[in-house]
Length: 195
Image: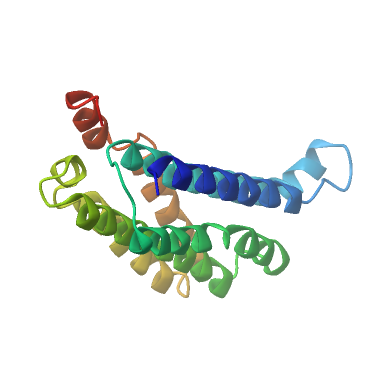
């Protein structure tokens, strides 16, 4: 199978997940700033979810740009990542109905952590298929930022039971750190454009 087909599947699933999230957004009960202010927390939760899904999607595309082939292990790792990305609508709806309570806030972190672990499994699976001397392996190296992000998600999950706002602040900080796509992969891709 070619990486382009995997990209196409991922594009479709990501588009559906984002569409479901936006359809879950509550409308203001009145056409005033007070009505808009009442739904502002959910709008911000949507924005954070949109950004997080976009980060995974963006980095996924960069990663697949430097590989030539995929196998069954790669397909399952990709499906695992997509599974977690499709859980965003569920946790957003739960946060909307329960408020920024500890368990829904922690669950948001579980979804982020699951997606991050799955992304790492996908990366490792692609390196296994491409070989240790592959462009992807040269580009990612140890990937300290990914490991720090996962540790931050784990900390935020626990801290949600102390203060959900602390955990949400951690989710925002990690997302901010990933807003710029992974430049290491871009640099490797431009070094070897035939890939």
